[in-house]
Length: 173
Image (tube, rainbow, N blue to C red):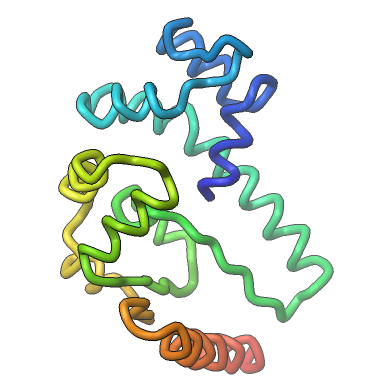
């Protein structure tokens, strides 16, 4: 979903004009693209601005995801589609899915991984984590939990188990 979010925010994308209008030219890079880091800093400190951004981005992302799923399932009727998104539970979008897989790890690993992946400071990552639903609450919504804090092979083993369970559901109809 994050990749689709990037797509809809590109010039010409479904959410671009709305974001540029709502937040203004100070949130655009010289090449006209949205300065995502600056925009994130703005909205994560102001819930009303985050709500506005989400209202511009989420419908377009959901529409793109639905189109991809429809296309895939038309060619693979018994296929399994997986949607990866950070805030499925918080946004209520989890209700749109048959099953929810929650991927977890220790907080220190989460911080290190986010810093490496997104180029954020430790403080920025911790600030984002603090604004999310606590992991213990998220776990109540999950049908399956994959713990990635151990060895890679252990993660693969858990993933295989979840896949086999999901596969058995598609075979039942």
